[in-house]
Image 1 (tube, rainbow, N blue to C red):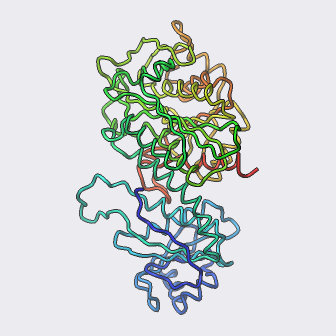
Image 2: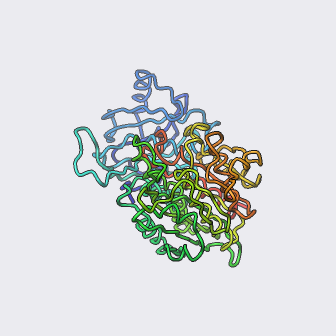
Image 3: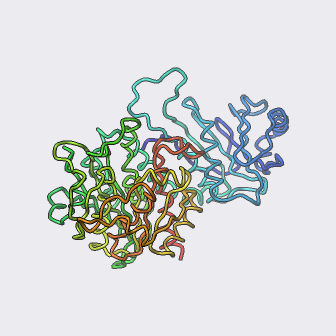
Length: 499
């Protein structure tokens, strides 16, 4: 793991260590245990708030150095806003705000998990702990020197003072597993492409076996035997051989059909013969954000021993332009038997997903499938970087994803599908072509994928704007966001564990 924040839970009455973090409402009211811990320093908070214009708004912070009357090195007061309007994601944010007050030199922090009305619930305190770890994540393993003023990774010991330490510790076992899954996804997206190529990606995914996940890796020979000509066509220009990885977590009822998640894993995308412009091409190391999410999700589910049967599948390729590379005008045959005319070799992710979706549909017969892919720039034009685009052939699944997005804070927005878009990818030479032109580009890409789901309830998430390079948030300061792990873990929990 790329974080070194140790989080523990103690009783509210425990003595504070290091930086002290407390909460107030929008009237600057403190909780009873907080007021007792501060003693005479409570008046200091009021004076400092008046001087700084601090009103206790949700997520705002008042930072007091060397507070008089306290042993704490700093006192941080975080505004919780109006108690009646608090939601679960607010506590994630509060954890992120607290983490922003840590530095490489900070050895300890104590967070008093109390609102003016009393102790936070175990779930709220655990959300703070999760938000803290997510915000503190930093990917700097390849830096050998630090510039002046640049801080290295955090090494902090954080204690959350809660009403029921035992309950919070128990709840954080599952929540911590989900955070670990997000961190794994972030690490994968942030890795350079000379380090993380298809074979290495498959090796890392195979480490899930330690948690009880069944992992099967298909090499080029196996995929060729299966007829996965669409996926193999993308990778044929690279010296790095392609791989498909099938992961299975059987934590639910024996024999019950699984749910499935499929990730696009283009470890680097030059565009192939239809080569991309040089500007920002380095970002294409993140074109495997969907596959990274699926691996992180499978880790989270296995580590928290989810009572669910889940298949995770990722197609791993490099899209390179050598003398053996796929050309515009080529026609390939997918595993489904459908033929595809290649119009643009930079519309490659859908070719990878086509074969993996068909494989999963036929081999595992899931209740539903969700694929994730950094698929189109067009989705960023439509939705920016705050929502992932969602396309689905099933209203119930779409509604569940929308709800899970709101609950997790990883939001999705439903986009249209329809026959008027589908005809745009018809080809005069093959069953279909791999792009429908500039207009409605994210929609025609989804229409393409829909031809390979064999009628199974399915949703496609275009995460091009959310998986990498998205604006920094209270709980993510990383280029690779790990988007989708918390969203899909919530979807699985809602489907299996909250009936």
